[in-house]
Image (cartoon, rainbow, N blue to C red; front, top):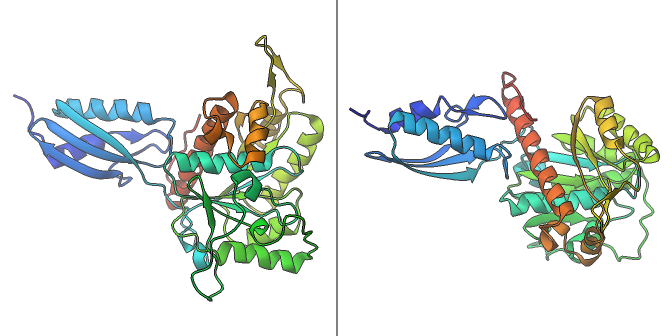
Length: 360
């Protein structure tokens, strides 16, 4: 005689299924959003902790197996998104921001803004609520790369700003407030005030991930950002070549000095795919992996060189939108998913130090 299925027996079965990235069961994680049991039929909506969860197929297999063992014969399984926050309070209009991820490089010209824009856009495509802060006051590129020129008109005279929006991403940049040709000749206090206003006085709303495109170097803006709002983690972008690695190392060391957890390293322009299928490693090989190993962090991914990446940036259409099936877009999408999962796992770990982390 088959077991009688009830909400309680289904939840008991789900309590034996662990979320692979944090090794805690889905009941403990409060991930069961919808549950309907009728005879041998179970309709279930399960919340995942990050968009494009790399373990989703494994999770679905384990859940179905557990429900079948409990007696279910007809299973309707859907997934939703429930991104955890790092639990750290943020001031002003940033109070609804769950996680802040800074993407830095230590030097300019390595594609840090390209990575930031495409990571933000890929996460928004996957269903997350995403913000993008262009903190490069001297050389803002986000408006051009996202195809937006102006901010929406403020709703009142309170002094707060509404973010611009494109591709499902809310964004803020000094480039929305000044003429393109205007040079920003600002000292430290002015930079600090601008960064504080961009975070606290912009009506971000509910944001799962605020991606911060950091300026080159290790100066005033980086320090102001760390002082203004808690950073969930940092990511370093580099080219494979030694000159870029030397500067990226300084960027990684900056995160350590500011006590910002370093999530990993992304290697941009790793290779050029030739017509005959061979790869030309224009800037050398292995620098990103070596840097990640040096700092004991993850090598998050490598992005190939493709003309469409540049064209997308110049034309205001990120490659993950304009050419989603290209090798570069696929790499950036996987990198975005990896960063999101690491951020969510770190947020849960901050809530409970007992969580063990598994990201491979």
